[in-house]
Length: 486
Image 1 (cartoon, rainbow, N blue to C red):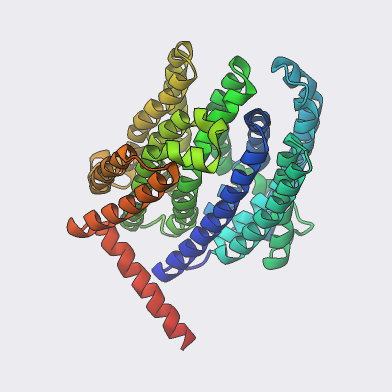
Image 2: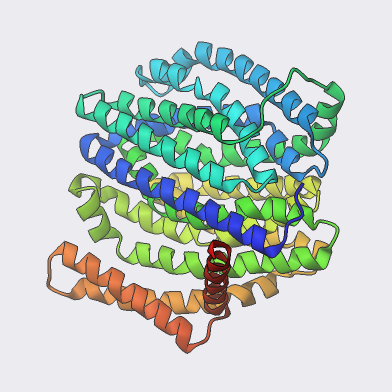
């Protein structure tokens, strides 16, 4: 693994941010076009199918990709062994899903699920290959290559999906888009990174990696099943259209969070793993990740929640307005992700996947209790229950790092409170624009402008540390780039 200095980590982070924002930005535009062409119930069908694909994908990766990143001396034998094992698991799972499809369709009384789930399950094989490529990219901080592959894939798959939707393919337009995206990522990475699979396999290496990865596998399986359980329940108890509204309301804030927080955390694991023997340094890096991601995410989540109605009306049209309450609820839920992911990545980087697993079990038992109670109160209560689970989970995730890194929950909240407070003030001012008697598009534009100016202004007035850090870092990077070009 490379010797990771600050410059390399920040450079990797910038490329990861570009990859996330670029691909998600284009994907967002594509999804808007598709949402205008397709109906909510068609999105509900795909959301339901993706639950089963996601669960199977957990077994395919088996925590090995994270183990490859975390292992200090991972070599070609490790990478090739994991690839062949993952492809074998993908084959077994594809057969199971293929023959289970009619029973799934019968349970949900949706015959269309049979061909859709059988075709989309092909992505398990592509995903197995992509997970190993992504592990190689992360270990070597080659996020520029990932940016190229992801951007190319999302453009090509977006074009395919839109053309298919215009041709009246309905739900199959979304299937074509998903398949094309995964396939293009694999093809482009094949030509942009040096790693190639070798005819090597070591059962001993697999067992060693599995001793770490097995706990992550169990954790990921529990987390994925728990996270998707609401989709399974809503798909069974309500209409596909309602599931489509739920899914779309979740997707808007999720795009922002995965762009910013996901980029930071993707770089965090290899960066923290490289310093896993220096507890003080790991704490400093973790603290920086929490403070910086919170400063960026809080205003976006608060802002999106207060502009939800004009945003949905203008971008997706009025047929998607029932998604507004879900969007607002999920904005609250996703606000807590910086605390969740930074704590969990630090625990993984320290090699304590056993603690990671214990936390997942505790959180999921608590979440299931909340979910069970909320079922009696309707679909919106199910979404609100997820917010409550997220708040409680921040306490649970932070608890071990008091001992591991001497970074308590109280310290973490002290670090993020300044960004949270100025975000709430900004949100109140942005919401007041709704009372202006002007067209919806003018309200939205005004709200965005007021929100941006207010947040930056408050950050400068109160001298928020994260704001100063970001400005200084950007200036340093610009200066270093100029130095290289000269």
